Image (cartoon, rainbow, N blue to C red):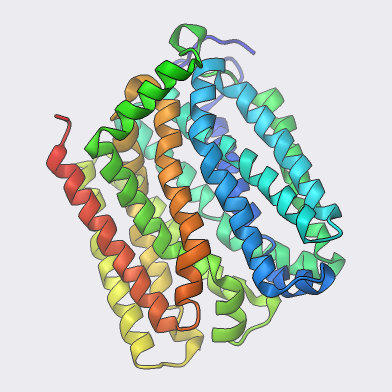
Length: 407
């Protein structure tokens, strides 16, 4: 593949804007599939591996912590060696980790496979977003990010549904074989269709001193940190329900393991609708205005969610009414927050993308290990938790606006 840089106006031969949108979305979806596909199998896996439900729940943490720890390095390494090789390596390792999980005779090998999945899954998420910013700029970058988000948003609905039916038809191990097949397919597709978007002239050496300085400079920018926290907080509002799905669906909603679509499909409808709105509003009004409109929608959703659960309404369908509305508002903010954050450090977008996602993934890990267990037993507590996280995200965005571009 050629290392010649390209722009939205001048593309490599045989490579088109649609291709990068679909590929980047697919690479990003893999991490979501690793979280959500096996959720319906928790109780069956606990029996098969002679483990407790709590042990299986902690396999989420075994994935999320290595994901969060490796995320800062994916972007820095890709800034040094290029984007394409990192995507290929990440998907190969994810395939190996998935096969380890499929073959696990006990909980220890399952944890090891999940950790390898977590270490590698972030490569596609981080580097794909950096590739978009290598190629597109300004309003066009916001529109592309929104389109990627629209496709990416399908993952939380598709993944648990696929997992539930695979569990029913062929058993829980087939879920991890399915993940191995997906990542192996991405290796093949990336080998033939992904060009190098970062030419050698724009790369930075992977020397510990300049890399450490770059990290320090980035996290010393209050605007960037506030934007990253603003993004992480609203995502955690939805992740409370994603990470607690096995208990929420079976215990609180009273449904079967094959019924995860009742939770995820409404959420995804809201996410896709929000991404579509963001795509249409990009270039109309400021990024800050669009983010604030998204928060207004989330405030309405949070109020509905608290009210429904405080009145102890019937779980089906009332416990689900506010979730797609919250997802709509959340996705209205996402492309604009991402572009604003990456533009804080334009000379090292790979590293900036890594740090941005690192903040979100550490939040996911802490939520899985601490917040979800605290709130899991009460739908009202979950509703209050979602509202508090959204308000914190709005506060962080207001702080980011105070700093503007002057820091």
